[in-house]
Length: 582
Image (tube, rainbow, N blue to C red; front, side):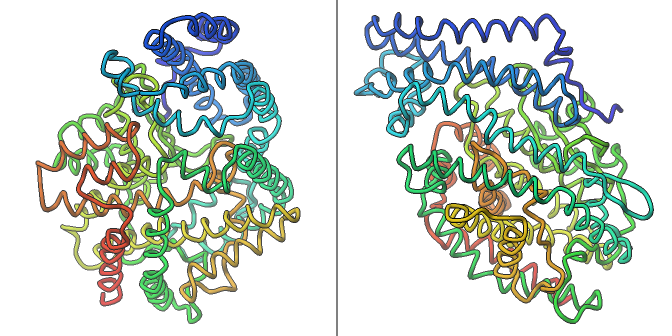
């Protein structure tokens, strides 16, 4: 089995004639866009709208395919100068399109009655939700000329700062055990069964950040200042308000979830104190033991064993899920192992035009890595539900993006736990609680941190020491006495790429949303059985064309009510009580 993904089905390289043809076609479309818009404006309304939608479709499909290929190439080799140059080429083309695209959005926002047009035109009917959302967001567009300037300057502004963070964290050399290693590899040692290894790896990780902290502090300040400035210019109350509107999520839903999380933090802290006691710590759990395995942790999984486990487990949920997983392993969708220049973490990207996905992991054979595969394959399953939709209806919002992935993690964990006993059961239960703590408590700390950075960066430049202080304060507020405050992780802002998107802020609360929404859905699956699966797939398919609240309503859930979020949190709290009894 090939352990690196195959990108040839997209393009065979940047010298591939089809790559250059697509780039040239995109350039041609962008150059001709102003004239095409003027031609469309002369048509009657139904024909005008449908012609603009078809034009936007083709541009979006080409931009996505080219950008996807380049980002996948860059993710496994951040030092590839040729790919960086091609990425800049693509960005320049799209920055030139910005004024015409803004004009097109304003024309489409001028539709008086979307439903009336949808009744007489099938294309407009399919894009009715998109057009209605466009009407709401058009008021935040700047003048066409300013939109072009914003797009062009982002290339050497926010996007460039984000690329700097990715480059520095993927290439920094870490001194560990008398030799050099990568940041991804040393971070993976946090899961080692050897206490000495975990602590030494933690110290080596913190030490390596000293080499890059100042550069990344500059990146974070400038990205957040750019986002704050633009959100204000566009008429948003705050960057968070802009994020929520773009996510199709109400502030009422976010507040209900965060209030419920805050109330349940003591349950997580109790689990952490118990784990600390089991590991011989008196003052709470030091960060370097946060991911320490408990119970029997000898079991590791080869890639073949991981494949077999996942297929067997998800055959019980839905055969088409298991079939897709088999396809992913056998058809080179996945890039498994860490190597120099490769990004840390994991992600999944839909390759809609060939009805596949591509998945990046840094696989180390532990059960946590199998869970990561299940998570990313959940994203792929979500993408499979929408791969036949029209190009502009293939993008779903941040919160629901983490639902199918987290559902898979819950399903895998529950099924493996069923047959486990003794030390193995303790290990699996603790693994589950450890991951729940990350997606609830640590995500809460990241939300607090990013909120503070947005607020304070407006009145001062946040140096690396300032950011370290904000991060430790956020961790203290979230983890409380569950962690030893003498051993926190003040550099968690350096290694998390989620903070460094100029077009995407607060990429933290969606993980908590996805986790708790998935738990609620899974509890319904246990009650409804097979009848649940078709409803679930229909909901996933609908996510690009509805708000998160509407997605919840499709499953009989009111996401604006705190009691729904408490349902998932009480489920986790019960597991914490079970662990403490064990």
